Length: 274
Ligand SMILES: Nc1nc2c(ncn2[C@@H]2O[C@H](COP(=O)(O)OP(=O)(O)OP(=O)(O)O)[C@@H](O)[C@H]2O)c(=O)[nH]1
Image 1 (tube, rainbow, N blue to C red):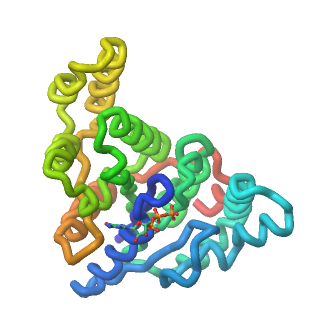
Image 2 (image 1 turned 30 degrees about the horizontal axis):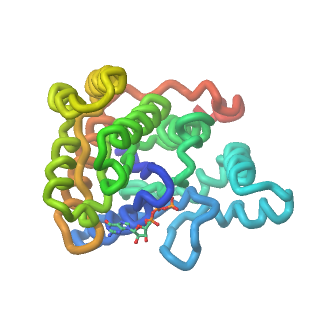
Image 3 (image 1 turned 90 degrees about the vertical axis):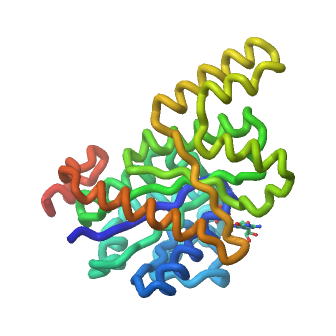
């Protein structure tokens, strides 16, 4: 049996760490074994209990101090360092065989939309460590209430999906913060976005904007970004269990697929391990 993992992605503050912890708590409450892997070298160490923590290898604070880099350059350096020390990750993951690993990723989405850092890690986990892997991309529900922001978020999710090449689910987080009935109604429409309905919505705007919206709505639909699952971590809610069952389904599907080819970006030494 392969190992099962979920990479939790999304912009800064979208609720990734809270969601990761909600998954772990829920899994523990139903007797399943799950562990948290922190891939954010800037994470606050006091907040969550990580089984595996990139900060044991390298921390952003140290890099910024010692190399006099800014936060973004520092983060890229941390990931380049991890890329050159993937055997550290292999050792840490070691024998977590029949268990779930939840990877809490940094909120700098350029790490999966521009720089192929997380795609390389994902491929390494699949090819070298035999993981059935999926991605959960979080967007903050209160931010995507208007259509333009929804499209912008959906496009960033799509960009991550295309670059990571992983079975992918989208999540609208912090649903409890959307209180107005009219906003909740609008969000419901985004959970299963129908290009025709979204097209109608843009009737009152500038015709060129409307045309752009329509094109994006069809693009999002064509790429199968058809569903966003609602998430509310503020209270005991069924949303976490529902998302876990989606993760189970898509990782099960991934397990039945042909094994991936070794990553092009992989270190040639890794190919010797195959
Ligand atoms: N009301 C509400 N607040 C939430 C929910 N999920 C997360 N939050 C809050 O949102 C803030 C950010 O949450 P985090 O889980 O740290 O977000 P993150 O995406 O991991 O943030 P970065 O690691 O900085 O990218 C925290 O104050 C959380 O308590 C939710 O479902 N409802």
